[in-house]
Each structure stands twice: as C-alpha cells, then as structure tokens.
Image (tube, rainbow, N blue to C red; front, side, top):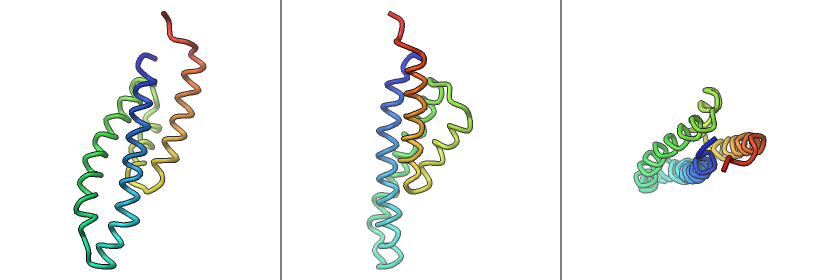
Length: 110
C-alpha cells in the first residue's frame, strides 16, 4: 500500500477545507443572498468552493486508487462535497477504514 498515508493526509485536508467552505456557502452565503439581497459571499465563496471541490475529487480518486477502495466508497466520498456536514462524517469513516487496513497490512517492507 505504497503512498497511502500521504494520499490519506491529502484527502483529509481537502475534506475539511471543502466541508468548511460548503458550510459557509450554505449557512452564510445563501441566506445572505436570498434573505438580505447581498450576493457577495456566494460570489466569492462559490467559485472557491468549486475549484477546491475539483482538488478534493482528485485527492479522493488518488486515495481510492492507492487504498483499493470500492466504487461505492468512492461514490460516498464524491457525494460528501455536495451535502453540508457529510464531508466530515465520510472523512472520519474513510480515515478509520484506511487506517485499519494499513494496520492490518503491517509495517512497510524495508
């Protein structure tokens, strides 16, 4: 499982970043845009979230390939960037699974 710890670290960082930006977009930006007529947050955070989501997708695919995750697991990781708060739960679940698999595989060969 070469490169899995690094791929997992990159995935976790991107999951948190994308999750936070999505929360800001949904909980702050959308209410301001439609409730107060102030679209500034959505206009700024929306494109940033979109770009970071692409980076998140790349890190999720990289981790799924390296850790040999199933297509269902990858689909859950992809969907986590669309639903607020889900990114944090899926990140925790994937981290627990991959860490357990790494521990079961034993130390890397020297």
